[in-house]
Image (cartoon, rainbow, N blue to C red):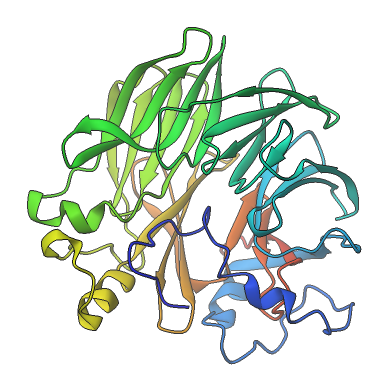
Length: 363
């Protein structure tokens, strides 16, 4: 799949990437986490992947007549729990560690407890489940067991791509908004009780000539760790460290397998030239940041290869020293508290098939 004009958000807004999975339901169940033949259309370096990671188990997310996995976005919930958002299906689901379906949360619609385009879900500090929906511009809250518990609407970010609980009714919002003309900020501290934005930070930081093109890449990922916020933005080779209040503390250069490179200048975003469209689509975009239990940081990046997406994986320490630079890796969905990595199964076109793996220890 090529990136469509103006389509920069890579994994949180991914309905097209997983569409083929619905048409591939006839693949038989079974199989293991051992290396298998990879479909020719998938751009994965399986030899390098299995040299770096040791499969622990294969994982299949349970499906039924009402639940079909299309584009899973996964976060870790309570111990042994997986929270899965599936935007095309307008569903949030809770799974056990073995992939068995426990609960379906919400349904398609615009009323309380309903979604149109859910893009992220996670547990708040009090155990509630928070779901973000950019189309409805709101957060939906559910009880720890999954029943509807309330809304926070009129979110001051467009598009609204995620939320992290900071406590005391404050949330870190992800997505472009505010800032100077042509220089949006990608992180925002929102006080839901007072209904105000306390601070907007992480500006685009591109030259003026590239800002129009850069505005089509809203993808931002952040992790809150104690009093620290770690963040990445799509078109920056930098890992940003902020205080919990939004003060910039440090910037760490990331030695990505494929650097993001310069952003072209496209006058007025007149995206009609096929070469200009291809140039935008081929840009490497930073998509996700994960903090590892061993103190390292994992960063995922991706770009269009003309047929679909190629993804790269970087693992480094917090000073930017790389311990793994893996080009053309399977898509990484989650790293849990035990440093288990959850990848798309590179040998299956079914999006509910995952490989759970550990890093191999270098001899």
